[in-house]
Amino acid sequence: MIAVMGRAGPVPGRVADRSPMSEGSSGLDVRAAFVEHGSSLLGFAVNALRDRALAEDCVQETFVRAWRARDSFDADRGSVRTWLFAIERRVVLDVYRARTRTPSVVPLEHAPDPVATVADPLERLGMAEGLARLSDDHRAAVVAVHLEGLSYREVSERTGVPVATLRTRVFHALRALRTHLDDQETTDD
Image (tube, rainbow, N blue to C red; front, side):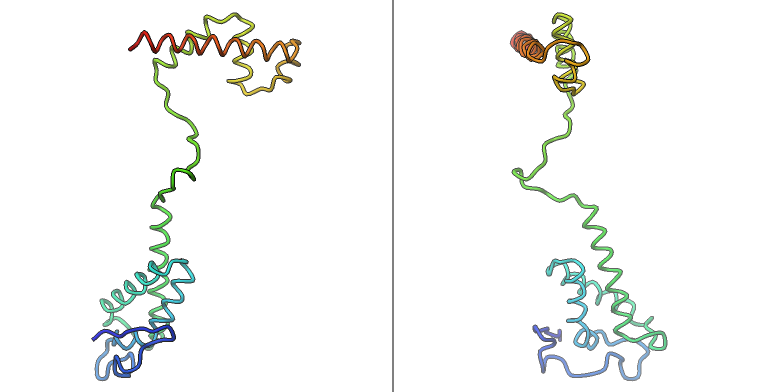
């Protein structure tokens, strides 16, 4: 017979009231221990994991481990409650560690943007070829702003070229690069 737990504890009449220590044996009566301590263990696990279903699994695993090790329980070393909470603590830690190791699935709308993508080597070669076809002034402006991450003002201070001129150079250079890369895609197909 399995004990049924209610909100406030065990449901009366489901399991006969008996001590967690079996009469005449050195082991542990796991059913009585469940009736007496199951709700406290569940509360501990829910509080630790913030997930009731996972906490219920932890309590179940705690009693499975307690049942397997019931003959090793020693009342002289501590109470049944202390022993069960020690087992529960290890089970909760195991679950917590497993949960942190397992990557969680994030809905697409909440997913972060990829940090970097692996570029196709041919695409990189096309970009290098396109940059090589630009004039020195246009190439320097694109590299400084888009590859080095400098602001137009910083580039202007470095080179002495007005910000408006740099913006125009970058605009025309990017348009020429886009045209070059689009032409390469059409010739590759």
